[in-house]
Image (cartoon, rainbow over all chains, first blue to last red; front, side, top):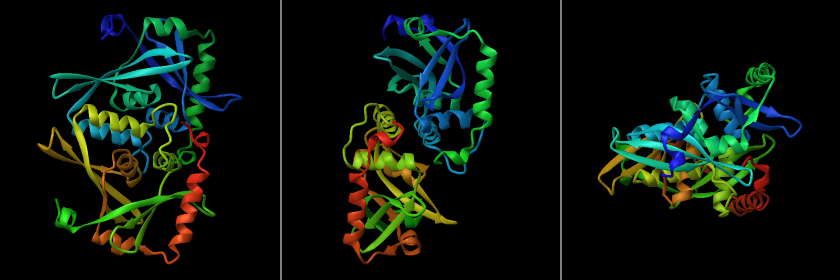
Length: 167
Length: 167
């Protein structure tokens, strides 16, 4: 593990929400550093956006979603999600790592993932979300009118209709 | 494990394809028994349909899809997909089981799944697909004009444009 991925060097992020970006109509995840004012916006697919947004409002879909199946697989295989890390940005593309603890703390395993899948997993098991100093320095944004942004997220969640998604 | 789920009582299915059903425009998976003429049609979500159809034509998406992540998780946790079973139909809803072998054949694990997720996993690791005699008796269909149906599946795959999916 590189130094920048060591826990003491990581920056904790809170998941602020999922919203639709206009006019592209592409969903975006907004993460905010816990002890600072920078936001990390990550564009994601519509399916992953619904997997995150529905879980944030604790909506129980009639059938388990694909990320619910992942949680079930991890449980059955005695693996625990320690945390996820938005680890890198390269050519405007974000990369993430899922850190698992296997068999009651005996073995650590790292799995490369898209940030959207990693976050959809993290919200289902309350795993903390981190990033590196390098990523937040390169891609972090200061959003001055936070209240307005938060209202937009709430608006997105309020208007999230599970029937719009293919679940 | 109930008797009907024992390997000697299972019926092997081949994945014939994914197509769009009209006028509902809902994707459907078509499975066919290997040693008989009955088909098992299962309606699924658009995301899962793309996850299956793209893998069938060996299309490599620019980023790994959620089911690719599941395969990676299973590999990292030393779990091998032994097979999947379309195990039950209840109120027109199909249920499936993913049977895993853990740690080089030492431990068997069963995971409940939607058939679409189970099949999207099976096509990625060439795991056999089975069903029970009860399910195929209840839900199996004889389709007389197989050639026409196969042409329709091919047509669906030919016209599957990865950019239409949120990947």
